[in-house]
Length: 192
Image (tube, rainbow, N blue to C red):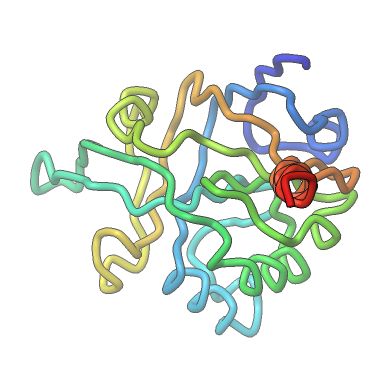
C-alpha cells in the first residue's frame, strides 16, 4: 500500500500509478454529481454545453449540505459525505466514454472496472464522515444547475488533504469490492 498526495486536475500518469488498496489525499478542485446532474451531463450533445470542465476532472458522488453565507454567492459546506455509487454505474460508464474524467469518489464501489481501465480510478470515501469531509473543503468555487436542488446540483469544491480515500478500483482492472464479495461467497460455500 502506497500513500499518494495528488493535485487536480489529474493526469493519466497520476491515475495509472494508483493501485487498489493505496491511499489518496487530494488537493485542488472536485465536482459533485449525483443522478440528476449525471443525466443532465449526458443530455448535452457537446462538452461546450456543460458549464464546467470535465476533462481530467474528479467527480464526487455527493449531495452536500450547503449554507449560503451572503448574497454575493459565498457558500459554506456543512456536510459532504459520499453517496452510494453503484446506482450511477450506467451513467458513469457513458460519462467516461464521452468526457475525460480521471477519478470518481463515492462509497460502496461500482461494477464498471472494465470501463475504468487505463483512464479512471474509483476512490472510496468512508460513509458517515460527512462533517469530516466538509472540514477538508476550503471553499465553494461555484455551483451549477441549482435548479436540480441542493443535493443534485453540481458543486465545484476546493479541497485540501481530502481523504483518506482508498483506491477501490484501479485503472488496471482490480476491483477490491468484487474481491471482497467473492471471498465472502467462497467462505459461505465452505460453511455449507
